[in-house]
Image 1 (cartoon, rainbow, N blue to C red):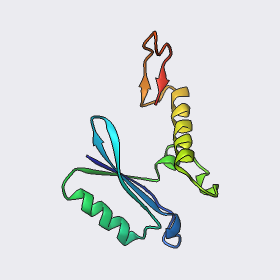
Image 2: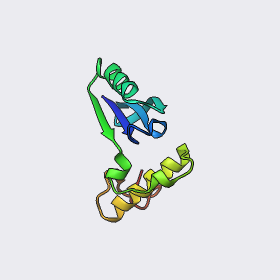
Image 3: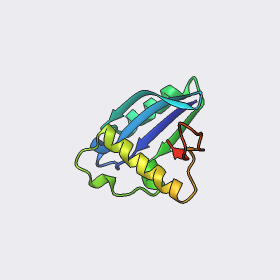
Image 4: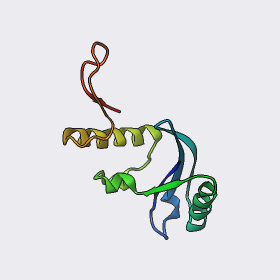
Length: 116
């Protein structure tokens, strides 16, 4: 399965529109490609190309729709900053017992539940 994430910034701001493509393999998402400054035609071509050979699922503006807002105020988003934001989102869900990636404790090496 192909998983595509799209962050839309509107038709007048394609500079901040981005797309990332992953392939799901054994419950892992393997990075395939990404693009930024994407207009509608670029997004459609990419989704269509990946959709030819595999089931494709597209998520749009995931972090905001999951309750993580305000990222558009950041001056520069790096991979590490995005990972930190995703970790904060996961921690919020875990705190409300809604975590999807909750792993139970497995003593002695992992004595506490954890989320990845």
